[in-house]
Length: 240
Image 1 (spheres, rainbow, N blue to C red):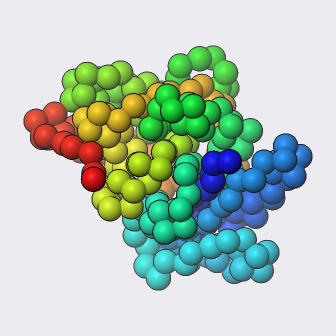
Image 2 (image 1 turned 135 degrees about the vertical axis):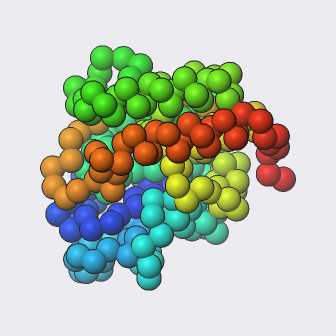
């Protein structure tokens, strides 16, 4: 049986993290699954760490805030060191639904993909929609990924992703600190890994504040697009 680890980066998620953990635990019991999890506390200044320790939630406490890239790479390093077969990136804010984990890991288990992205934009299954500006930004980034790699990716900023053992090793060695979702997706396509998108439903955040604020959207999009142009001209090879 494949060992599956849910990596949950969390920054100031005191209002959400226990609910996220309980839903995963209840799902494992109901469906007889055995998804492990690890919360990566990214230097939170609230009670995220305290809540996890009080409730015996597996956690790694980072001394400083590294940002989403550093927090997620910490999870990949943990997964590599503990010999996991699949990592699922899973948000600590309650937006991701554990019921869809089985869908996004299935192509990896069957050897049909190295990364599977949970996508809001390839079917009508998802009812939660981000702002118009955010959706337009995602579409523009999608165009740039297609230009850089030759492959169309619809949900370019989805953090709900599953990765194979080979990618666990790759990301354990190197992971971008900024704009990790679109950048890693483009880079692994250039490395000739197989990437698929699977439709999922996501929920709106019920508490707390997203790490990507609306006023940053244009800045975020422009910098991602510039990075993708660099990826277009660079040569890549798989890690050995």
